[in-house]
Length: 446
Image (tube, rainbow, N blue to C red; front, side):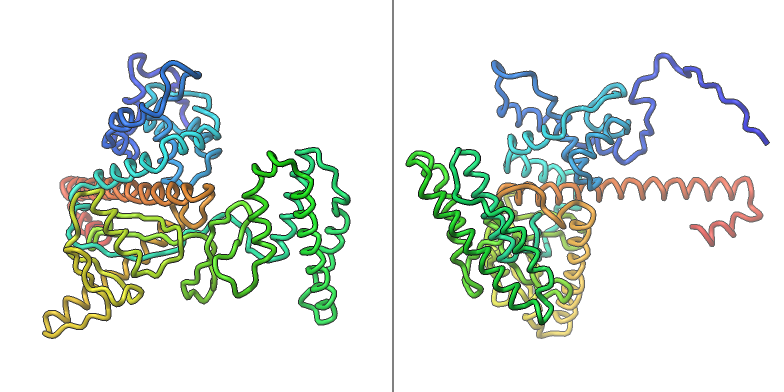
């Protein structure tokens, strides 16, 4: 049977963009719950009223970086999808449907750097406020995880070849004539390392690896010798980094694992499938029963878990002007019983009475829920791999991931409430007009 032709004419000349959207959509509800004026008032100080071209609206830029982490998108993808999605546009403050991209993807980079750590903390606190009473629990669960950096798996040979490429690049930029660029030589030596696991090729591969290291050191010394005094001062930190990479050994501490991200740490969390992770350690604080992330702190060094607890509680106090009554932790924090007015509960603590033992057992069962929340952060909100550069990038990515998790939690909660409300209406309707089989539907579906 052919479908009847639909009337494609304009249904209402006076309808607004807001009226054309479903008011029960989670993004629509979230757009009306967030206090956008606070962001505009706070971030206005980062702009100059007298110089430069007119900037994009603050709500647009804040909305885009929130949507990016809620939907797990890149800068390029969120800008493209914004042009196609009316709910994205309404969320960012548009009053009519726009058929062009809101901004260039690189403008999101500049905006993140402009508002910095303070701006990200403000977005995070707003995400906690959206959750209402669920974020005001007196007991919290704390755990640490690794935020991996976007670097390749480090090997000495990779680092030495990158030093060679960097030195050749500096020579071309500063018009320095090198005795030899070693392009063909390095390429040939790299081929000799392809079968280094083969017993016959091990000696050749080790010899080629040693030769590449020799070439890297030779180029670093030649660049340092031929640069003028003023230019040498500009490249001094880079050359010192190259020398540190060339001189480091297997058993050294504070090793360099990446040329472009020298602050990356090698962290082992005891995972059987991933022995080492390269990034930085982060502390996540979660409300015990409702599962709202109320604390997210990025660590610059690979500290013992117990040493991260005090800074995490300090961040909580700065955000909310109070301290949690109880913090539930795992054995990684053993040896700590109290910090300030907060009682630390770890599996090391044993109850004396039956009631106390039961309470501790329930607390530690609930503590394990944070592992699933960390998994959601990594798989759904871009915490699994950090593409933002430098130490400030670690802070920005963590706070935006935690904010997106809290926003997404409320969106899911609103959707479940609407689904439950519709199910009740449907069951009442069936019972009123079709009483003979309403019980079947109620027993199966509801």
